[in-house]
Image (cartoon, rainbow, N blue to C red; front, side, top):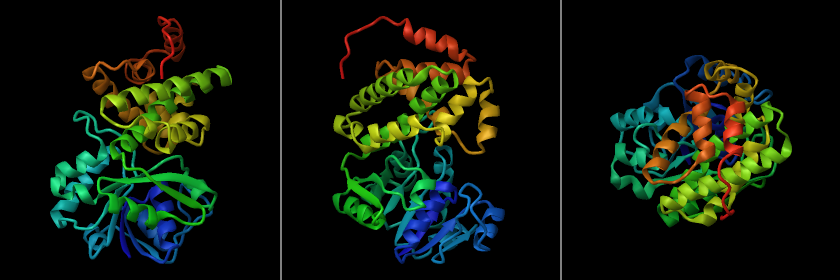
Length: 332
């Protein structure tokens, strides 16, 4: 296939390399001219030391060139960047091929999940073309060929199977899951819980505290997903629990590391500058909290993460508030 890949960050570079290794021609688009030049000249990716582009993968800053004759379009941009990128796509062409989302988030102000953003821009007619690849996966591990399992989903059943087949390799296993909205919410909301777990680690609260945050955080994700008519088993699977385990359990995660730096006394701007990448959990918690209030779904961990980032609540005070809440019977 000729594949158009939108985005050349660590995850985009990693998956482009995976697809190129399967014999596909991959043209990756990025706005960053310096990065495109470096990668085309076989320099290492700045966030993936030791890894250079696959011979079947080239980079361009010309979006029209990347889109031309594409059999598959894949995106790996930020949640905030998704709308402007696909507005630019629309100005060039109306895609007729499958479109795969690999970013994780909820748009601010609109509360739209990423498939909904694309349909709003390109029209409801592209619904059957849209899918998502999501699950517990670090770029640095996937590009090394370490065993990884994720899920592929789409509105259309045949497109879902196509996505799974397109990405599956001997070390990258893709399970089909037909609950596309559940996959989207699971991937987006786990980043917020990862920020909370990073804060816990930064405060030195121990493993017991992190285990509680992960469990109760997964409960928050499940409650909101169910309120949005998603399947509970999706949140119990790779796109929910699997992703929570990965991003909450290690400071490799930019979201966990962001929380850790906040607990160490950095401001949100200082922490994001230190990480040098967009922290989706900080972006998504605004929309998640808005949606939870609209649906009357209690999300105390999400609320505390929001207050720490945007209302200057101290992490220690947030912990105190969470521990002093009225105790109710555990119900999952």
